[in-house]
Image (cartoon, rainbow, N blue to C red; front, side):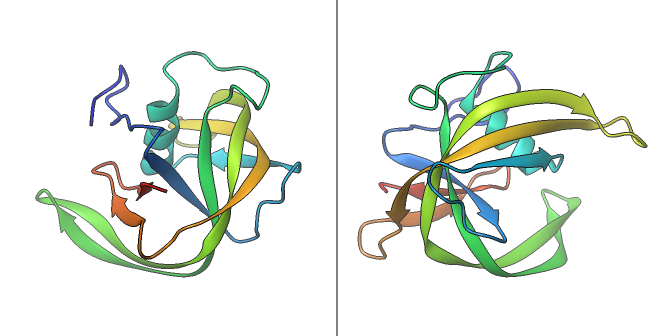
Length: 148
């Protein structure tokens, strides 16, 4: 894995697909707005684009996979000697590609921490196959499907 200007790990888009969990499935051709502020999701978006991305056609837009998450369980854990979280995540193996349509950098009102407003559009469906696909978690905390 390489590092981009923001310090996020980059990935090989030909063999690795970042995964984002949603409560409702993403439908092909439908747009959805995401309000991202958790460091792992910010790093995932940063790993996909290094520029001030404002708008583009979905054919050339960075893509990630969206899978419906049916259950999450979080607990406190030590990560590199610092307080962190451990998550058990149950998700459906059938998902949809999401193309980034628009990014808007912003700040959270109370803390002033970074947030990103992301408009995504649903694309082709995919299935994570047990036999040919492995799931790993990046050091930044988001999942990647390998050889999807």
